[in-house]
Each structure stands twice: as C-alpha cells, then as structure tokens.
Length: 259
Image 1: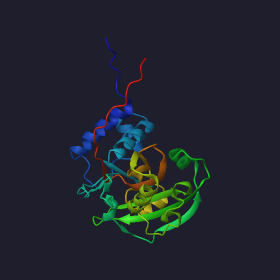
Image 2 (image 1 turned 45 degrees about the vertical axis):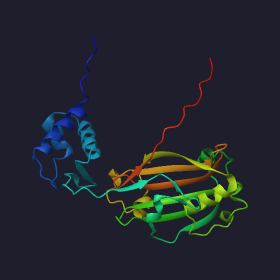
Image 3 (image 1 turned 60 degrees about the horizontal axis):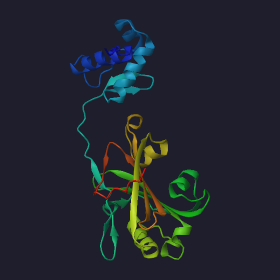
Image 4 (image 1 turned 30 degrees about the vertical axis):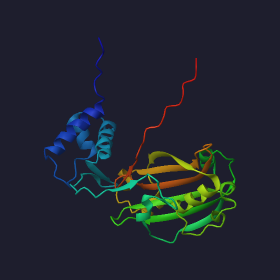
C-alpha cells in the first residue's frame, strides 16, 4: 500500500490563508497580519509563515511591500494579451513575420560584435566569431512591448547586403537575402523563461517586476539542405502580456536504425 505523506506545514498554512482571503476575511488592498502575529495565531514558526506568504505571492494573491508588509492584491481587470504568430510566411518575392505589425519605440542600433559563448553554441560556430547585432525595442498597437535582436555571423552574410546592415534591417529582409545565398530555409525555435533585469523592467514597462517573468524565444534560421545555422533571433517579452503562437505541420518520421 502506498504511503500518503502529509503536506509540508507551509503548504497547509498557505491553504488556510488562501481560503481566508477568498472568503473575504481580509479585503482587497488590506494588509494581512504580520509574521509574528500569524506565527502565534497558527502555532507555527516564522519561517513557515514566510514560506506560506511566498507561495501566495507567487500565485498572485498577495503583494509584498518592502518594509510595510503583505497586502491582499486588489482585483484587476485582465490585461489584454497580444499574440505573436511565430510562423514565417513566404511569397515568390518576399518573406513575412508577425513583427511587421510592430513599430520601433526608439532608434534601432547596429553593432559589430564577437559572438559570445551562448550564441556560439546555438549557431554551432566558434566563440568570438565576428557578427552584426541589430537590436530593436518594438511596440504593438495594444501597448505590448518586445525586445528583438538579430545576430548575423559574418561567415553567413558575406557577399550579401546584410554584410553592411542598416538599422532598418528586419528578420524578413534577412531571410530573403540568406535564401538568395544559401537556398531554402527552415527555422528551429526554443522558448524559455526567467525574471527580468532592472533594464528590461524599464524598457518593457513591467509594473509588477517581482511577479512577472519574461518569455524568451530563440529562433535559429538554417538551411534546409544541411541544417547549417545562419542567423539567431531573440525575442524577449513580459509573459503577462504576450503569447507565442506556433503552427505545426506533421513531418515524416526519421527512418529507424536497424538494431
């Protein structure tokens, strides 16, 4: 027979406090009792109270104000979300992405850089290789913001207009010239999350920075023929305001290797 383990004490306390909040014991915007008071009231340690409060904070039920205490989060209207379609469209003469709907918040920048360790691993090229980095801060009509960067290794763009990029270079423009030089393209993408840095909080206008993670998409453009990586795009956005949408088509499974 399986052994049923009891919940950790801080989870039990979090359940109790959650029910109290939902039943209106503390009104939205009001302060809940301090750690010492809750510790005495429920007969648990202050460390247990602290963990329970952290749990409810992560769930969005509490706001913690440094030096003041914990407050029941006031009900807010759900902020409108913006969907970024990650599909790449193609016509006979051009490519397109959903970034075409976004506008620059500030003047884009172009810099000549050496590729760092992380990007080099993604692009399967040596660290320190020469590349152009194009950085843009973009806004959607809905008010959502994203930080978008394009990393173009010199070895992939030599002999194309991308070797002397202007600040208005877009991903779709880069796709077109990479395809002219290297043939048919394909894309591989990974999405991860992390908490924002202070600079990212300011640029992306994140209000509740302590409870708002970032979504980060890394999309690699590569050749269909050999899978050689040609370009790395990074899109960074608050997870609370933007959704990434993907269109997937079935592919033939790889042939099995005989045993």
